[in-house]
Length: 307
Image (tube, rainbow, N blue to C red; front, side):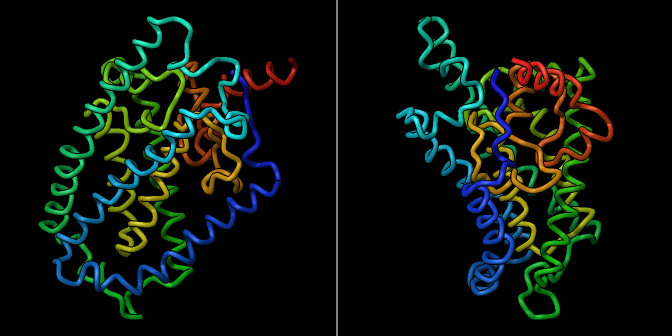
């Protein structure tokens, strides 16, 4: 496996990555505020939050549709960023058995993802909203757009940072537990059926794994930080973007979620899938560095650098 550390190297692509991040953090909130009442004014807070929780579904579908022609055309411009560049894509393998196995995995993955997105996600969203309302922990001003409740730019950035930090700790913990305990790994190993990632692999999770490694960290972060609904949506899309980016199979240098300090890079998670070792984080490198997870990755990168 070839390691590509191009996502943090200064280049014109990093400029585009930073520009995307700035639009995400500062441009979209202005757009949201203008249309927030129009979009959600006729719904109760619970109904509106339920809708927001389902926005990742079309985002996920759209991302995968965009990647389809890139995977199919195999243009040299994109292929230069392919991480596992020492092997061919599985659907191009010269062995018919491998190709058939891959397409069987794709069909199984689509079925599993459909269950997670169209059945499990709505159920979890409903249970989360219902529970918080009953406990009196929901925010009655979560959809207000007046100046007293709409988050300032500083508040928005602060909450997204805190959401990401809490979520990353939750994901690192649950993900590491999934690899440590056989009773949990029997569910998580389904996710590792993809040894070479494509975007579809990002949500290829057994339902139990989906709840523990995706649902629980997100619920933990949102419940602790209790952000405004617009901040929650921005962060949810940012997190999904990072998850898709983890599994896209390319180390795109224009990725908006990889260029900044303490960000994990795409090749780390690709290494995790190819070797099934370490790199337990997702968006950030912090907890891998503090609690461990980079030992095997660093050994591999050192070996690669030495040729």
